[in-house]
Length: 471
Image (tube, rainbow, N blue to C red; front, top):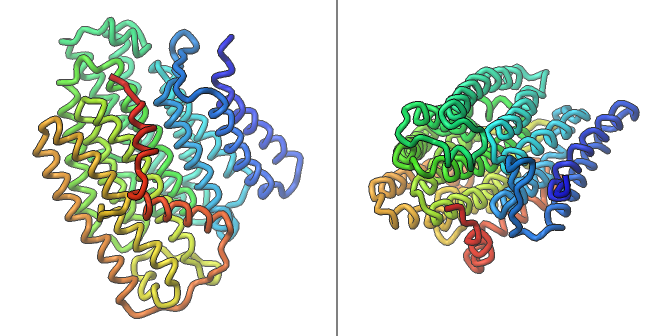
């Protein structure tokens, strides 16, 4: 209990959620107030994290909760993402009439669950965090009850996520049975490396986590859920759960199961190759931008897993760098999507971008930058993200993985360039509205500037991530 001050950020968010629920009950029409307070509470949470030295390492609650450099960095990334998601989607939720008090509260609840996941050093605590995140996401996916697609996506995500959680829990029970502990450090000490039970347990845990980051072949929920959910929920799905799941991947694979790397490395390599290739090929035929970005995110998670498969600190650092950069690219893309509004209606098909450059030159330029970056065109930030991954992979002589990654990058470039062709060379359509919220403009400007000018001074991000040493 002496070290409770190290989890002030989590306690603060939990208290904020309870306070907002009370405000919502006793004050009528308080949705706008709670939404703004939710953004402020995330800023407060960020301030509490920065109030302690970032490189501190503390183990709490009988070594089941860990505050270290990795968890602190990933939490900062997570909360920044949450702030930008709420800022950019404030007008959207008002226009499609989902600005209920529960909406920001569910987002905060999911963030708390992810923070618990990131710091967990115990299978039980990790599972509690995972379920808190997932339960919030089920409701968020189907939040737009008047839209049949939203209800369908929520149900689909619920059924498939429940299945994956069951598999993951079964894997956890196997590991507990064969090691006698749920604590990551004790599992590493007690585990019989040659036990088939442990191998099966690791496979089931990886399966459950692969579902959370929509890696092939556990990706089937992503395109439908991305398309059916409200766009403000889709941007949340596309960024925050990926950050938390990657942190858990690193923590689980490299703390309790580092000794059996030969057994899980090939699985991660397979997931990586399958995700990169499938994400690149399946996106080619898509007409809806949200479905396209779903397949794109499957491919991007493949690149992040390629870094994890190397079994080195450099590989882990390259994956964390990749997810940090991926956050800004996705944020910018969805900000552009929020700007495709006309007569209180939002447009999300590729054909709706036809001739956009004629009437919306700044928005078109932002989309051009984002799409080139997603395709990995130098000198934009997306090129550096892939460069770090391929460097880590080649250093471990995993040449076939690097070659497949490069091929999938070339294939994926096709559908990004096709959208640019539609924006700049197709006949123009009716003009879109230009009165957007200040939060949306700030989010788009910040993310686009980061994507465009990262190459000038990349060292701050690299220096921060180089301090993360797991092995």
